[in-house]
Image (cartoon, rainbow, N blue to C red; front, side):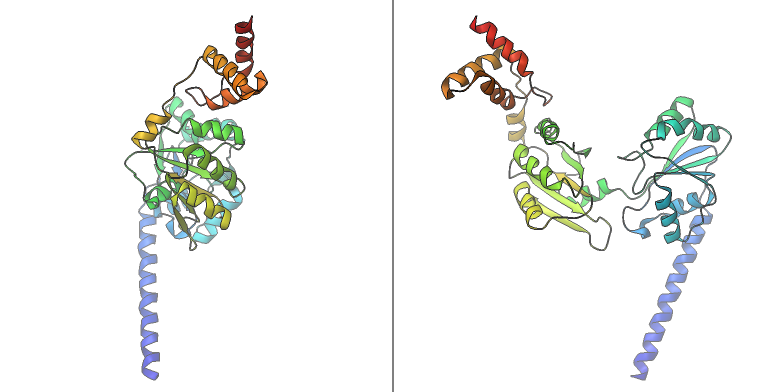
Length: 327
């Protein structure tokens, strides 16, 4: 027993030495990191696991003249977890004020300041603030660079098991059911792997609409808690993932990765827009065959035949054309 205790002590010392060496190595990387002056720097922050923070991010947090943060409280919480002291001036920079604040920040860049832009998680501009200052910096001829790092989009794509050679990122799905369905219809013939963001409160409705638009057999993955201890990747068909959402509702924000259309699916979904006159003729036939009011028939026909962009024809125009045909 005494030997075992000695061995445990030796193992503990070795682990402590390794950790100390790792910390020393990180400190060396941080000290050796160049922080460019007179530049806007977009820096990726951890999306869940603090250990994913890069030496470059740490150096920028410590030495940037101004830190423009989506949420200043979260910024300081991250800095505390990293053991970093933010020495520069911290300003709130979010969706509601980024256009107004960008030029003021860029005025400081012109004087030689380093302006660091960070979002709550991941890379600024990817569904987060940052685009306004990038555009204005380009217009004003001021330098912009990135300190890359964690990305929920790329993590989910890599873990999905779906093709990664060609993909498209579509951000958050629309909130309203009708707009979401219309939007998804425009993607039915998309051959690339498709990546969406979705929230806890809308995932059930979103999965129902994915099932309705893409059908039950398309492959997909639902990814949540990425990089965290409880990371979860659900893989299967849309029907299987939809059922899993019903049986075991996921928590938190998640990333949905959906396989692109097969050649057959793409051909079947290829837009074949009908004219207003065509829709009017179909509506008249539907009303006669199914004994419907003409307005109800028009509603059905218009819903069944979206335009090339996924939107629906104007029912009033179809109705007026029907009246003209009956005269």
